[in-house]
Length: 312
Image (cartoon, rainbow, N blue to C red; front, top):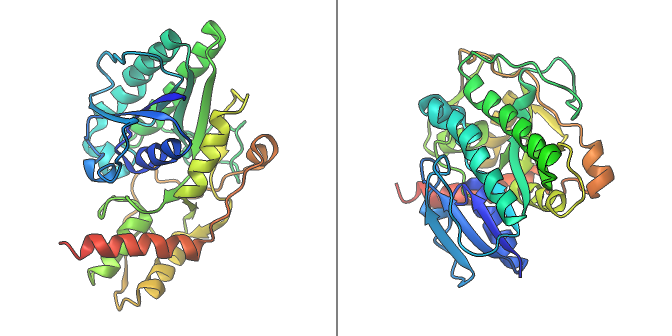
């Protein structure tokens, strides 16, 4: 039975990965300091092969016994989170990555860093391929997240080259689904929350900026295929179907039958104008591509949000 450590395991993506690996027969150690994660995300897990440890991974990590996989998902991931917690974001991407890599090396475990499409910054190429180095402002407000992830990628590759560590890098594009926070700060949860509450839907900029939205179950399947592969180069995992933010807002208004209006406000500093993954590499080496249609994924997400709003 494989034994896997997941940092950030009580977060949106981490908790879904806990479920996925437990279903695969793994023993799972979930580690989270709950700065943005929530025990609600793992409260449903009733499995004697699951352990939760509250711990900040920027401090020394100690896990007794064997560990076969170390998955580093810990990090604030929404702009409202990493702008409020800029230094913890930098520390979890640097010190946290160093600590988890050290543990993986000591345990001779396979390592995976959950990186992001934000390493491409406000891209000058479209769609974004893994060999694009990015257009990032290192001293802008978003730099605390972008550069933390770029550093974590560099550190993972250094351990791979210097120590022969089996390190994987997944570049995650916009993902959505159940367990996102009501006021997460990202487009889909923001729009759904505002629509259900009868509030105006807030679009930053003119709404022409694009994103590509991947449902969480598709993303988790793609990451797992990378984890068990022989690939050590970065791999994009996301949905290549691109749409504007305004189109997404209109779709959510329609799905919720909301009478809310769309309002516009200033675009945040360094906000990417376009975002679309080139997933040719994932198709080739992982035989992976997303399968969940947007309408299906949005309905599942909407159903989850309705249960949350009903308790307010």
